[in-house]
Length: 174
Image (cartoon, rainbow, N blue to C red; front, side):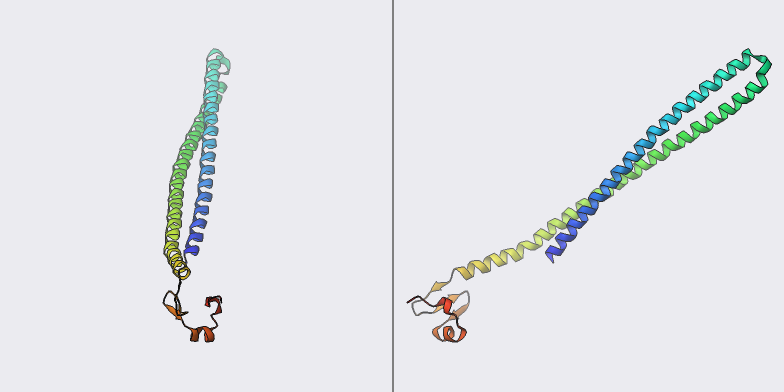
């Protein structure tokens, strides 16, 4: 059962590492989204700058002022929409980073639990291994008795038992 627990702990550790890897990719993608959002802000500022330049030209060219003003309004409107969408993109990216951090925390808890399971599995092996070691030591340290009776732990082999049990390996060499 201890080996089964160790195997499960190792599988849990592997799964925790895969989850951690996916969370890191999520953070990477969120950072790329923030970078793209900053490009959107830059483009929105260029749009606002262009709208202001158009407004300036309208003031200088009163002949086309109505059409130019209409274009300026559309340009400002589109720039504001772009800026608004960019801000939403930034907040969504931040939300994604927060979720990724929560995922890292969950993955680390999974790794911790897997390590604890591995430690418990190793601890479960300690008693059987110690018992096996004690049994081996007691079987190895048998003593020869003068009456050709040999003891191995609590078992006594006499000449009668040697003939019937065929325990010839314990007979003295003559």
